[in-house]
Image (cartoon, rainbow over all chains, first blue to last red):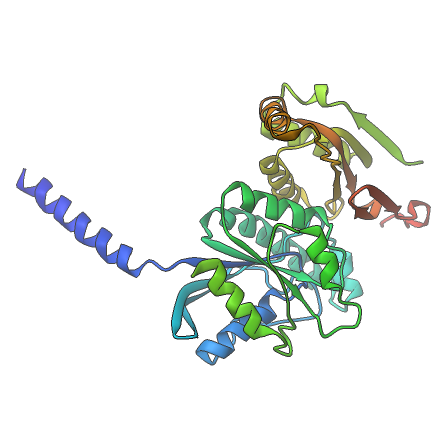
Length: 211
Length: 130
């Protein structure tokens, strides 16, 4: 009896501690090479003064979920805290021969392909845990890919708030309007994560999404 | 060998559970067939299809190209829209088409809202592996 009461008390205290400490998870999702890690690095550099992960021109550089805890951004006297979750790019195909063409040796390429498939599975499994998601799309690419539509459809079905970032607006071929036309029900913000163009608008969008 | 286009009427998958649906379609794609499914999978099943595809990837099977054409032209006002949504929920979405092509055969599927362009790889150029 007394033991049960003590157990209940300890559980209650622990629950309260974790409740107070619980921070929302903000996920970065999208196809490979859209610039998720570049954006994660930009956010972490702006607010923590450090990078989050490595970036590369070869697809599937991020092959494991990466988390930066307790990121706090500030704007107009308001604060927004979250755990930033950078995820591997979601794809429907992965061919190790593409990595060989990009300059990797066969063994490295096969290993990268294996890790990349696992990364996609992990990214999909983590979808349910997100409190809000930024979909990072390459503004120079076709937005009507089924991967984009499937990710966004699943987030919509789970009522998870979504902000779409049209990245790489510094490139001539970038077409933000095409992305807006593909996803008219969402707020689409054009940025260059690499050069920091329009990032202030992006932070305002984050406050609107989660604030 | 030429391209094989396998048409799958929705009735062929409607009795199956989500995992068996996805596996049936994926098994066809793994046999180098381009699957043309009447209607579309549920959102959750599309997500499962990507997940299971990743689990199955090896040196021979490189994954799939996936596209859904879904006109979604529901006319007739609010109540018809609700009725359509309920029917979709209960019976599955039979509107439009889903294309699942093995990545070793289909290079790219370009999609506009009402048009699909399917680019295939030149399989005649494939060298046999030693």
